[in-house]
Length: 103
Image 1 (cartoon, one colour):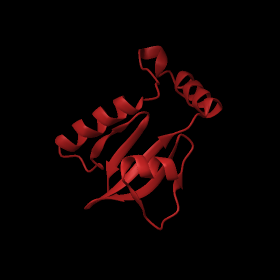
Image 2 (tube, helix red, strand yellow):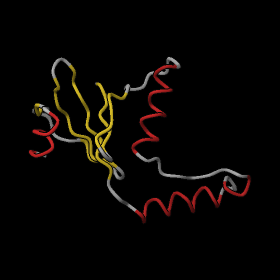
Image 3 (cartoon, helix red, strand yellow):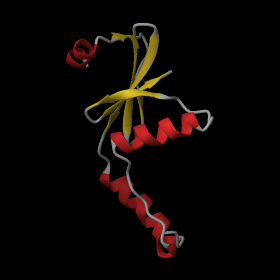
């Protein structure tokens, strides 16, 4: 994370990252903002299990879709949810495939 930190002028916060099955979330400070940097990771087996589950309950058979959002898609989804007044962490921006979120 050192190269990333320098390129984005982020100061690391003394907190362990949150590692999920599809993302690892790192904590930084950027000027006066605390930032969560969401870095995606691949987990094709788990994703296929999720697709299978929704197929089994009939969701996809009724026209539903199960897709993994891109960083751009997650940015837009979070931005629109925040604008609609939902309690979400508003996005600050994108850095390639990584999403910066204000915390």
